[in-house]
Amino acid sequence: MPIKNRFAELLPEITEWRQDFHRNPELLFDTHRTAGIVADKLAAFGCDEVVTGIGRTGVVGVIKGKTDTTGNVIGLRADMDALPILEETGVDYASTTPGKMHACGHDGHTAMLLGAAKYLSETRNFDGTVVVIFQPAEEGGGGGREMVEDGMMERFNIKEVYGMHNWPKLPIGQFAIRPGPFFAATDQFELIVEGRGGHAAKPNEAIDTTLIASHIVVALQSIVSRNIHPDGNLVVSVTSFETSSKAFNVLPQTVHIKGTIRSMGTEMRALGETRMREISAGVAATYGGTVEVIFHPGYPATVNSPEQTEFAAEVARAVSGDCQDAEITMGGEDFSYMLEKRPGAYILVGNGDTADVHHPKYNFSDETIPAGCSYWAEIVERRMPAA
Image (cartoon, rainbow, N blue to C red; front, top):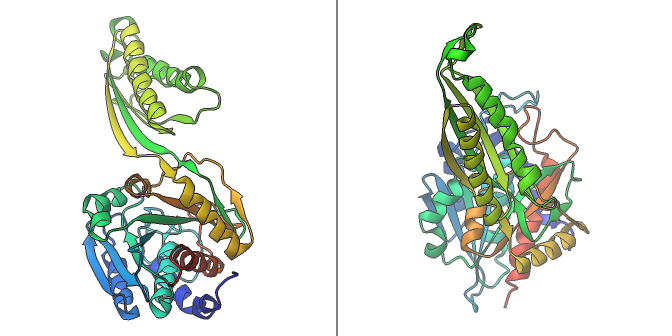
């Protein structure tokens, strides 16, 4: 089944929605305008139920098929939030809010799922129920967790759930997926190194926190090189190093380090945290200082269910003619919370030769819309064929 003709017809309308979302980006849970538009459109499409305020500003639409002989309920999820980035695309529909932009394509995700919802509301050529999920705060806020904790899965009796993300460099309209671990767990850490400040000319009278912190930064890299199997997937990155003094002739009392640990699997995730704590404490003690370790658990790893992944790949091949085997990515994705509660699959759809996500020159390709919408529709019609 190639791209559905209806989505070719709807492309100008869906593109208009997408570009409007792009002009008006909203961050984290502050997606009130976007959520309001989504809810209004779902109601106008004729969804059987539209619920707002799930996960603070999330929106859910319920679409019932012509029949329901099995009680199957499929959830389809899109994210709505933007990023705190100053846009540099130069497009005529660029962000009207300086310092905020849709630099990850969530405007496209929302528009594509709206397009699919309109089609499914028109045709209802399936046996069961579709729940379209529009989630806030994927970019660091954990909106997926909030919607799950609000009881979304139980309230709407969702049996399995599917997500999608655009992917720059993958050809437009092509798909890629993998079973099992796909996106990494995204934990963060802070290390507060304490010593004894002093004059730079008298280091013997101080406990040099800059020296201690520097050794910690280097030693943390041994976690991956010496504790993890060469085939393992773990990344430890120090991203910030700030001393309490900015003077040229002062040894600072405190150094504040920040960073992230990306991992696949619960054992590796636990090992990364444990070794970070042990190494930091040991190095600090060696040089006479102390360190406070603050660990911020982030999104869990995104793990695709084997059966649903195989089915999603089959649908992708039907839509585009091919579905590539995706590589593991150490980026994070809070669709993971939904996959912890229900079996499902997360797939990538090509965005073409564009700037990478989270870049000020990134822009979602509207040419991707027909493939994305067709994939959503085919997931429903193939998984729950009309009785």
